[in-house]
Image (cartoon, rainbow, N blue to C red; front, side):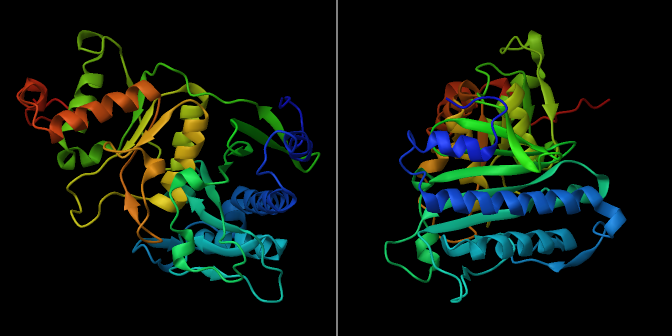
Length: 358
């Protein structure tokens, strides 16, 4: 049983006896990831002192502005983990193709998928950012990874987690047997268990969504948000608070600590894109964490972890958090998709704004 105050190394030693997947190679890979996160925590803490903020270096493969810290963190994770001898390949948000492990390093049995710096739009305003990772098993005997090797559903993840760079640097991860949070102790230069057995609270009074996209939402999401905004006087009989940080790591961490639901749903803003977030290195690892903590994660129409990937940078809608709230949203989507007139003709589906007009 994980104990508060344990170092990550102590946690791994104890978990080896009850987690079959926790072999020496996986431990070595996770230790190298820790080292990468420590380094990233240092440079993000320095910020403008080291001239890391405010610099755009171009457009990445996603068609999004790429910050200097995006490329630096990508290089740190690759440079730290490629020498671990545990990897067959790496896929990253910042790279169009799979990164092949150089032949002078030993190839290993795992694949690493990562978002090196989630929430980089927050860098200049000094708001919490993070790194997200997912670990998959490589095909047996493979020495070079292909794109197809990474196209595995989230149910096949061996481990997943994130590092959070805020007032404290944290590592939150799951090996498939619960979720545990470790805080970086600068005096010991290691992560120490501070949040054992993290659980998503069963009730929620907060939701997170980008309200500027309201006009593009599908009706099920519009209905859900409208009900929340009606507070105690509405059908939910609860006053909800609305949050939006624009950092998936920060949003998920808040839900793990105090509950709620996060929504980046399918909408009509960019009809050619099924969703905004990437399945392999954002939605899948966060869905694994949330499910292991007793919550749920869905596209609105299916469980995230069962989605079969079709490309390395596939986008997908993401709704996650309190299980009851995610299930409610899924029911609203079913009602909408099946043409349930008792739902569609309800006043809640009239076109309206989140905000009153004079």
